[in-house]
Image 1: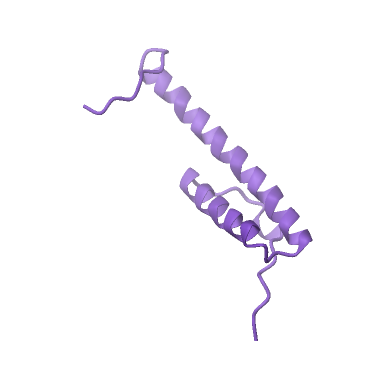
Image 2: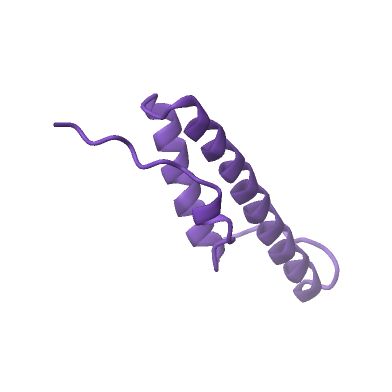
Length: 83
């Protein structure tokens, strides 16, 4: 007998991940579940909302790292070159 998909509930995953990598991994899992077409509508909406929160978290972390790089490089971002 097929198992029902695990519901996506905001209450079980309200906390933001501890790292960018953890947020990205969770976001990738949510996208796969949404794209599978197997989620009920309410769960799909919850997954979308969680995904939006995770995306905002990832963007904030990337912006914070970018600002740190600016500080290290004297206020300007330098183009990435492999030396």
